[in-house]
Image (cartoon, rainbow, N blue to C red; front, top):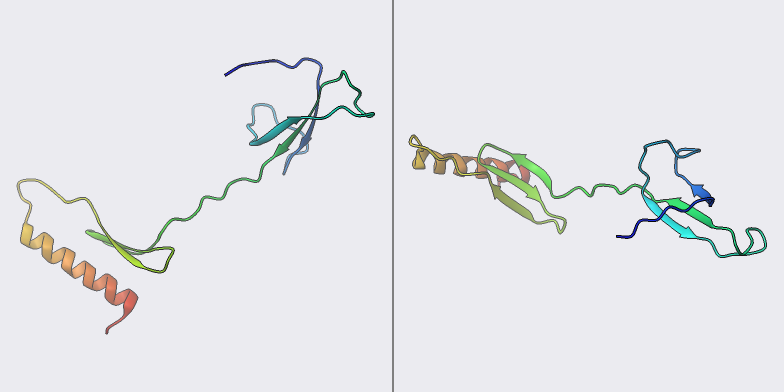
Length: 117
């Protein structure tokens, strides 16, 4: 990365909310060196900074059901997806109890979303 300091240059800004750039505040956007014309002459350094629109965080798969063992999510294509939470471990882990809890949660999640069929 090459670092330069442009001394005695003119910077025109197009900001979304602020009238002037705030000290220490970071702005996302692009900067370009303007082409020389009659207004800014041939030897002067003129730049334009345009602040970009803030990116909206795209919401990922919506959670339809959040339980102790599973999560039911809705995919962008309309499909359903079951996600299992981390499998508990330890000496007192009850396989039968865990399997029954997972089964009950899956039935509850599907019944709530799809209804009885």
